[in-house]
Length: 308
Image 1 (cartoon, rainbow, N blue to C red):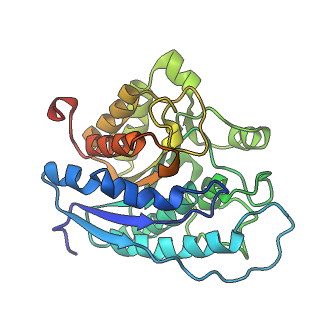
Image 2: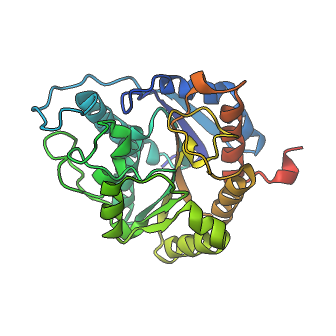
């Protein structure tokens, strides 16, 4: 196994998970904002794999939900991303999947799960998001598939014959959602029946985030697990991160977000990372892209005192 590379960058220009256009430009915005430069300044050896080519979609059988958007394209992306993620994971280091909308995580996490199974390690996922993305193909009213990856990854019914088989579904107790604040009735009922760790924005307001997040990370450590972090721009408050098509007021502040990254880094558990839903078309002078770069640098070890 090649362990000379500390982090791998892969652009995923998947934008069909939602109707809002612009996330296709996310990987280039992150590159322009200096993501690789910031990581190299930390002494990390990086490899940029470029952008994954868009796969050819295969027509699936008709789905009874007439609102589903770009089902065939997202299904094709899911398989292609999963295969590439598993390949890159085999090179050691931390893959950074630069999106692209959150539908890409159906592929990135599936690929990392395959790599974790091969390594005999449990994969834990920390979902930093205003939304739970726990709809199935049957329950989504919007038809936007960026709202379905966690349902697919955990083996919820309804994806068979449309998406690649999830051979090793993620156990619900190995998933944590932090920053949740926009959940519809269908998802709320489904989440209530799960064993996922959920710490929403009200819980953060009332109890803070340090102690519960450390408790989740300690569970990962006790299990000898790998940690995949999936960071959606809408985890952040839109006042500091406007470049997202699903803005929800009341998100994480800049300091709270940096604290989350620092705690994860200190745990030593990070194995892979998604950066998703960045829409440069909606940004203001690149502020969101630059913030994502800064947060990623914190996740890889930069402290506030190092940034001056």
